[in-house]
Length: 366
Image: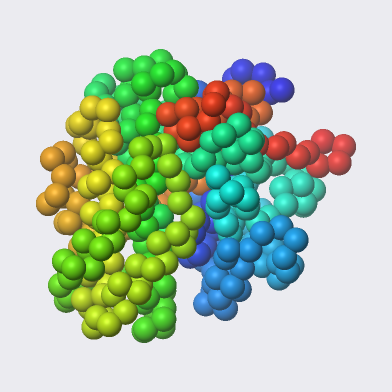
């Protein structure tokens, strides 16, 4: 087990938007953030995105050799560009997520990465949580708690990650530790960028709605939005989590709409899901800090600002990096795992007891 003390850790994240691999360094003892280091990004090509998209929904034992080789190769390319890390947090590529069914599946072998990098690699962060009855997601909240402390927050606030799926973390920075009762509430709000990206690729051959340009030209169709909000998921109390394609029928709801109206409606659905989610916060947050690709969509951000009672801003407003926050999170979590500290608790995943997830693989002789 790692002794207490701060060190530089390197984290990597490849999200459900399938855009690429983020990697970033954080100086931390697993509890307090003492510094943010360099970061890098390795984009997936259109061909690579197609390989990964074809693997979505698959489980171990199915034919995944090409996708797995791609995931590991892409991660090694970006991780090898860093120096000075004591260990690596490797999330892998989520292909399927059924916490109350078959479990969760993140593609990529951390043991092979450890050998290739010559560094300890912490991976398989979600399985232990699911074995103890948790949702296995979201996992960034313990890092969000550390970020709230780092920015000097004194009142409850919320972090919203708008990736392929949206997830919300409500943080009470007045608590001493993230696993303390009442410190955190976290859950997936609903789909975010994934349906928009899928529709853009299917209809226009473009990976996403750049700057919300197409949504800006369209109108939100209220009938489709109301049908979407009738989904039983929104009635479930958190913690709760989603697979990337749980709401795949969203595209069916807009299938007969013109491109601009379809994208505007999907964008409105993502924002409306966040609004529903905010109703679960134990105490109104004083601000909502947005991370992930969705914060670059001005239409999405305006929809959120218009519907919520608190200020909405990208995390850059408080000096954080919204493109790298999840990669930084897995660097921080890797240190927590190495120190035997919890990485999830009842308030974040619904797990029966606070648990330290993750497997540590060390290079031979390391």
